[in-house]
Image (cartoon, rainbow, N blue to C red; front, side, top):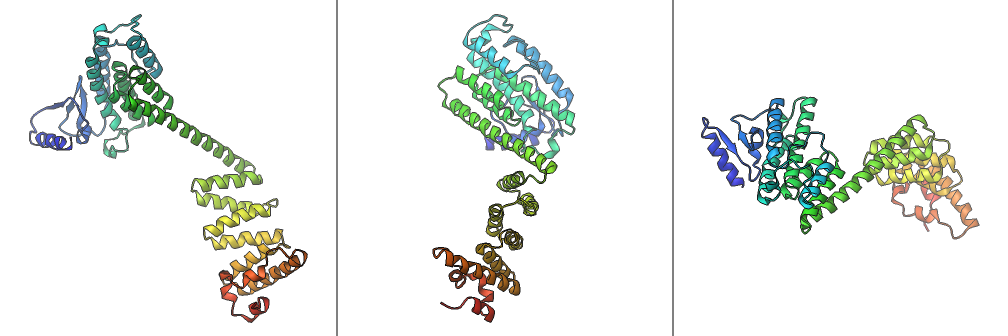
Length: 381
């Protein structure tokens, strides 16, 4: 098809005085900027269109609304819901119930006709939908919010007709589902897929599509709940900055979302909270240690030492960080306090961790190791 597309482009470019029209069998990307609806097929205009106009939408809408009278009836509007089309499909195509049916019953018995006209309509819908996708270059996007909404509205209408013409057409179903997913319309997408399954129950692709859609819907629901929770936490953090659990919870959420700077800002705020515990400070310290933020780590450890002055481990870690930062005097002073606290603890509990043994091999203290003061504090074993 890529070769066919290139051949079509060569023929098009070398015949500038001819009019070109196409009945799409397979989408050719180069044509999208040039195509506009022309009855049941499409015209390939000589120059690409910067956007689709209201006049294009109006003519196409009126043509297909009138044309559908000879197919399944002219009852689909902008406001017709996906569920109403699904109900129609079950009633007419499955139940053969023609109560209120205004179309042609010959069409309902004509599988090939259903597929053909659904294909023609979904091809036009596909041209519309292309201008809503990331693949569409900016120069071919609608230029105003109003024209963008008009395009969305007309695309949805065209897909609804295509779906009504043949609710079991894989092309109509999958194209419409992709469009609906772009607007997080998961329930409507599931209605389309499940209706197709009722008419084509042994199609494994449709069964897989339904499972995939249900998974998407669940993931989106989980994400929406998480976003709502985060917004509530952000609001609480603004109105009640003293709510420490909320501040730390929000910071953790930011880290999960890889918004590190926002998390650090909240950590800085939490560290100054008078009610913060050593365990909470320890968790913040672990993050800074793992992420290599030594300056931030020094500040947290300094706060822990103030809160828990009788604990040897925070004092030791504080000394180690100061040694890494080249603060020799401060490191030696805090190391002495840590080892003194450690000695007292060992007297009461000989099974406790021996920080003196750790200091003999701790690489963080290497900048102090040749100093007489350090050798006095940490004699060789």
